Image (cartoon, rainbow over all chains, first blue to last red; front, side, top):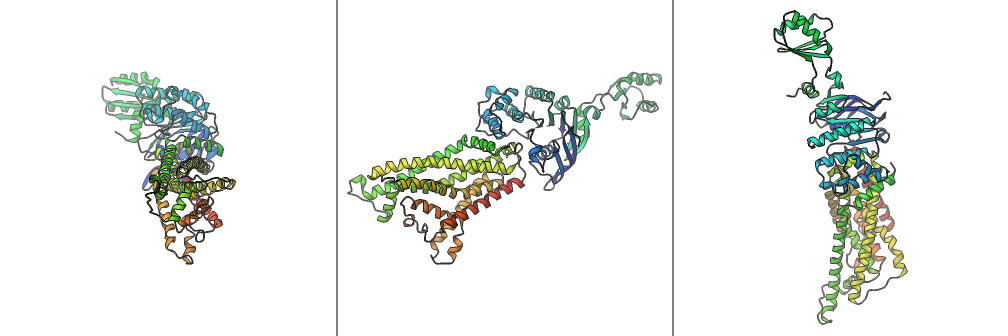
Length: 302
Length: 301
C-alpha cells in the first residue's frame, strides 16, 4: 500500500443472511482528497463505512485505514479518524455541549475542544440545549462537530446533508470544502450527486454491494474529452464520415445525436468537416455530462 | 485511549442521566413506605395510638420484636442493607439496562466504539462506573435509612444506640451488599449485549432475578440434612442469601426468625458464597464481553 493511501479495502465482502450487502469491494482513497462514495439506498455504503470503523466484521476481505488492518490493529487504524455514520446519534438528555464533552473526556481531550468544535459548525448559541430539542439540521451539525473533536486526519461522513434544507445543505458543503482545504481526507457517502460533484475529486459508485465505477470525476465523465453533435441532416452519414478521422475515438450514436470521443477544442474542426460534406449540424458543443446523469446511466436507474 | 478517560466519560453520562435520579427517588420513597409500614405494625401491636388500650396483634411477639429492632440502632443498618439488596437489586437492573441497552437503542454505541475500538476497555469502564454509582447510591440510601430509623425509633420510644463495632461493620456490609448486586448487573449487561437493546436488558435482568429468587425459595421445602441441599447451595440465590443474612446478623438482627431459609446453618459458608458470587459475576461479565466483541454494532433502533 502506498504511503499516500489512507483507506484501502481488499475484496471486502459482507452478507446479511441471504442478502449480499457488500460484494468483493476493493477501493483506495488517497490522503488529502475528498472521495465520494455513491450509491442508491441499500447499496452497501453504510455497511462499508461500518466495516472501515470496525463496527461490522467482514465475512472475507480486509480493510486498512492509515495503513493498519482495522480488524487486527483497530486502535492504530482509528486513532485519527472522525466518523459520522447514519443518523446523528447522541444522548437525548444531554445538551449538545455535554454530548461533545462525553466524547472529549473519553478521548482524554480537554472540555474546551467541545466548544471549539461547536464554534466550527456554528452551534454555540444552542450548545446548552438538550439534544432532543434540536432540529435535524442542528443534529447533523453536532454530528459533524463530533467528528472534528480530535482534529482527525480522516473524516468519514455518511449522508451529512440528510434532512437539511437547501441553505443547510450549502452550509455543510462549504464546511466540507473548508475541512478539505485544511488537508484532511474526507470520505463522503451521499446520494445527493450535485453536492458530491462540487466537492469530490474522485468517486466510487456502488450498487448492490459492488463497485460499478471508480475514478476521478473528470475521467469518469470524460470531461473535455467528448464532443456532442446534434445532426440536422443524416446522422448515419455523419457517423460514417467521422469514423474515418484518425484523431476521433469511439462514436456513440443516440438518434440524431453523436457523442464523439475527441478533445473539446476540436469541435470547430468537426463542424467544418461535416459542413464540407454537406451534413448540416444543428448543435455542436463540448459534452459536459453531470455526475447525476452518469450515476443514473451506470446504475441503470430511470 | 486510557481506561480512566473512558471511565470519566461513563461517569459523566450516568450521573447526569435523569433515570439515575428517578430510580434513587423511587427507592427512597419505597423505603419511607416500607419503614412506615413496619412502624405502623409495631405501633399498632403496642397500642401506641390508643395509649395501650387497644392492641392489634397480627404477628407473634418474637416477630414483632425483630421488626422493632429494624427501627432502632444498630438494627436499622441491617434493615437498610436488606432493602438495598431487595428493592435496590431491581433498581440496579433497570439502571444497568438503561446504561448499556440505551446505547444500542439510541445508536450511541456506534458513536463510542467508532472512537474506542477496544471493546473490553469500554465495557470495563462502564461496569466500574455502574458499580461506583451503585455504591454512591448505597451511601445516600444508608444515610436516609439512618434518618428514618432515628425518626421511627424515637416515635416508638427507643431509638437504640450505635457502638464502635457497629460503625466498623458498615464497610464490610457495604462490600457484601455490592457483591450481592454484581451478578445481576453482569447478567443484565450480558442480556443487553446479547439482545442488543434496552428491552432485552430489562427483560433479561428481571427474568433472571425472578427465576433466581424462585429457585432459592425451593430450599424452604428441602430438609436440612438432604443431599439436595448441596445442589441448591450452588444456586446464586442461596449464596446471596448468605451475604444478606450476614449483613442482618452484623447489626443484631435474626432474619431466620422472619424467613426460615435465611439460616446460616442451612446456607452456604461465607467462603463458598464469596467464591460462587465471584464466579457467577465473572461468567456473566465474560458473556457480556463475548457478545459485545463478537457481534456487529447496529445503528439506532
